[in-house]
Length: 204
Image 1 (cartoon, rainbow, N blue to C red):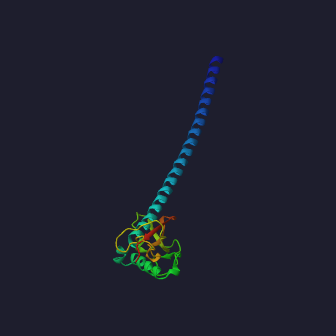
Image 2: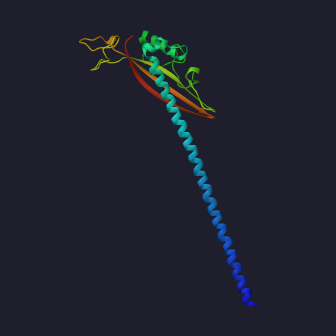
Image 3: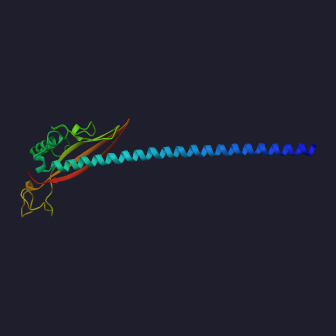
């Protein structure tokens, strides 16, 4: 009987140790799973922020591409109502008043209003968006004066500058700085990105 009792005690102790080891392993595995899920969630959030940031950069680039198209003299002649025509009129007003050079003006205002980054993009400068996301850009235009005449040529067609002996400064191309401030809003978070581009246009 004593031998049987000893074997029973050893079996009970072994069973108790097995349960303790199993519980410790279960706790370790649970801790590891929670840690991995936290890392996965953090990675998902980081990727989402990166995607929205890339979208904001693309929207800012869209604003610059829009400006390059409509600041062209020939395109500006047929500019539709809205910001495209505002850009054309603003460009003409800045060229008429040299004292306004170096001051950024808001394209969306359609008048000589100083440009302040941000604000709600005009309807015609808001881009189509996925559900729950709005995106658009605001633009500022600065007349930077005439492009310096230094070892350069802007072509040989009508209205372009051709270097010549004693060429006049007023025949040099006009130089513009365009700033595009993009906004991408998804839920309560707004991502912003700014781009600036300098453009030379033939004399008008």
